[in-house]
Image (cartoon, rainbow, N blue to C red; front, side):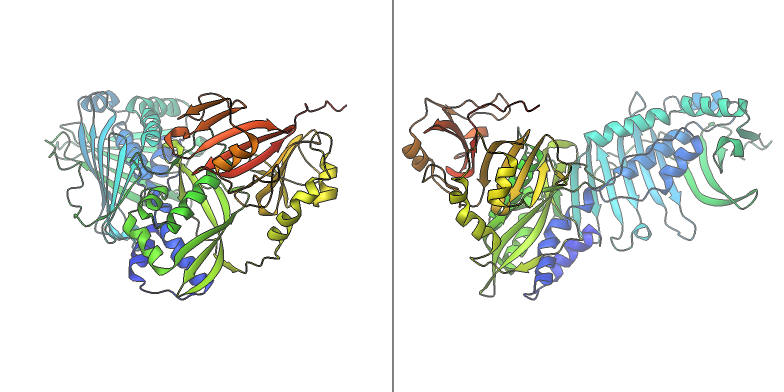
Length: 587
């Protein structure tokens, strides 16, 4: 299902039943609305002229439209450079000073072409780009118009009245690389070299009538490891390319037409509206990923830490009915779209957020899946749902993360029983830890007391029990974790879920005032500490970090035990005890 279909369906569905699969549909509508709109696979560069243009031309239009840019650039700069050996320099010279071209890309059986309007700067780099994609390319989404300008890409999906805006500096750099490889001088040099090596056959036909075009045929021979040919038509007066026919080899010696490209309007006076989406109506649904409020900054957090925090803030925003915040965390989805989800069922409580796992996709190798259990109320019926919330960095902003989603996940209704594994484990955790010594006990001791962990992890990797690295984390129910290094305990503690208690009082949910009353005041307080500026120091209370009120850190030694805590809204959400003695070198 395409993202625009998801948004359309989201508005059309007036009611969904209370079963978990139906609730999955509600949850997924918002989370998938922006996901595939930002999909774009990196341009694949090939040394061959024919491969460059064929590879570019067959690439599908992605909703983020970055690939369209690659297509256009490869077409433009190839066709600026394809004049044959009859007088290649004439066409190369003719393109000096060309700053605008209009391209039509025809498909067999379709009367309406794809269209591209391209403006170049003085250095012959792409300055502005407009793309029209007819409905036949993706019937489910209908026609689309995209504009790329100053590293910002906008795509209007007309049938669904959705406008996506993304910052595209990263992809812009990729496009510049593609431009260099498709520069006329590069193409001419390659054709000359291939011809000298006997790998390409170039023929030129120059008619006597000046009204007829020069025809240049570049045929790749078997020893070139390529198949196909490019046939160019060159205007005899201007020496500019007017059309290109792309042919793929079919059978033995035959060719099949793969497409027709027409070029016109060289250097015409460009209307200022060409590179704006002036057609977009005022009531369009806007998804803008360029604003400063979109997503969540990673700061100095590890990937798994930002993943958990982002999932927590997204669910909490739904609970608080803060639809503006939830929409921003989803990459700029409008609040009114998120609100529809909140109107169908009320999110009431986060039950637990479990250990995240790496889940790379074709947009980001850093994408992470965060298993979450949360409580909802629908039609006065309260039940718990389990859902994997997927998060990843924003395109072009690697330090900003947003909530995305994959369609293959399901929401599962679960029963929350006070005697379940998590509750039972955390209920007995303190008495079990009392039999261990954090400075002397080993990983084997942990297993003998707490049992085998749910998993062995480190930096989003999962390890088998019989193949563990030197450093890893043992994860238990209720997001309780034990950090191991050289088979010795580095720390243990809990995230998000109360149960583990330090010093008889402090646990998840304890207030900052309660903590300071129990373990004493800090030696120093630092306000507004910026994460990443330097490392934390013990006995210093870092308050309102990154400008977030109630976001604090405090580490100290109390009663011979070393403790480190993170606070959100001045309440503990991360509580870990560390060893006070150094790790021993084990021979």
